[in-house]
Length: 265
Image (cartoon, rainbow, N blue to C red; front, side, top):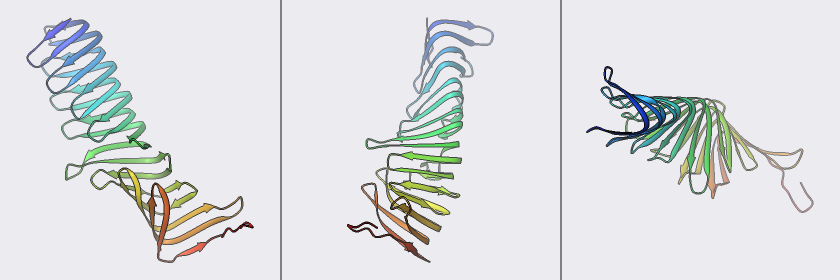
C-alpha cells in the first residue's frame, strides 16, 4: 500500500485510514518518508493532521543529526518531541556517540535527550571504545551550542586502559574535558587514583593530562604485600601513549616507594 502526500509518502504492508479523525493505522512493516525525516515501524498509527505518531515494534525515527530507536516511540514532528520506551537507542551522527536506556525523551529542535533505566553512553573510536553506565544520562547543548553529556548517580567508566567510578560526571565536547565529581576513583594499568574531584583532559579522545584536587592519592601494587603510594593536596598526572609517565604533586607531598633491584625489593 502506498499513500502519497505533498509532505510525506507512506509505504505499508497494510493500513487503515479513519476519515473522521484523520489517523492512519499501520499493520506490518511501514516506512514514512519526508524531506526532513525517515520513520519505520511494524505497527502503530500516524495522525495526518497533527503530524503525531505512535510507533511500535522495531520503531525508528531518523533525521540528518540523529537516529532514535525503541520498542515503542511517541513522536511529534512539529515540535520535535519524542518519548521512547524499552531498548532505547539514540545515535548522534555528528559526534559519533550512542546513548542507550529503557526510558528516554528527546527534543530534536534543542538537541536535548534524557535516558534512564540502565542508561549507557558509548563513544566509539578507531583505537578504542569508551563505555559509561549511570542511573541517568543527559545530552544537551551549552550556551555556545556545543554538546555536553552529564551522568548522574552510580557512574561507572570502562575503557581498555582506564576504568573508574564516581557519583556524577560531565563531558564537554567543546574542550574535550571529563569532570568526575564526588569520591571518584580511577584504575589505570597498575595504579589506583582517587581525589575529591578529578578532571581528565583528552586529546584525540585519549587521556593527556589528569588533574586531581583535594585529598589526592595514588597507589600501585609492587608485590603481594607492598604498595607504592603518593599522597598530596593536588596532583597533575601526565599521559603519553595512554600510559601514565609523570606525576606532579602540589602541596603536602608524601610518598612511600619500594625500590627494586636484581635481588628484589
